[in-house]
Length: 158
Picture 1 (cartoon, one colour):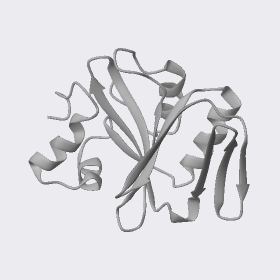
Picture 2 (spheres, rainbow, N blue to C red):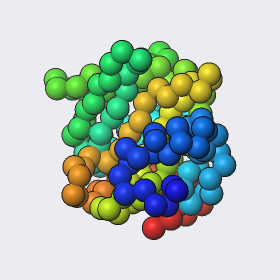
Picture 3 (cartoon, helix red, strand yellow):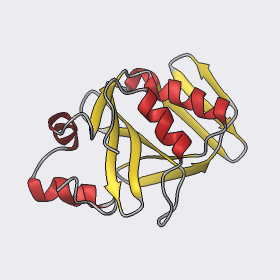
Picture 4 (cartoon, rainbow, N blue to C red):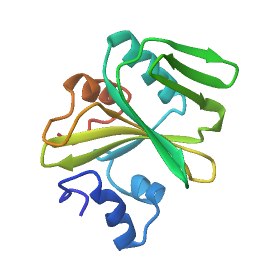
């Protein structure tokens, strides 16, 4: 079912239909589709996208809301346990000590593969998801894909 997806939004329904938790699915699928990476990968990735001027999308929220950012960033800075994006148009304050697990996730779409970095708390709650900036009908940014692949010890499906 994972390989038959045409849109990343189908993933939630796939999990629900199969009555499986997201982290269980990530752990049980092959390394070509999901790989656990070091918990500091989110900070590393934010530094890397700022240095390389790679546009990305960031999804974060709680049970009552979600915030989405799309675009490049330049101003990133660590302050204590917080890794911060400090832009006039976007602020992110990520408590990296709260990240218990991080995964690079690879999903097929009609536009090609879409690769994300997903960070989870100790209790398995999603903290944040990062994707390369794109819109439906557009393929994933090659620079984004290459960056996330560089964090993986095993090649991703292509």
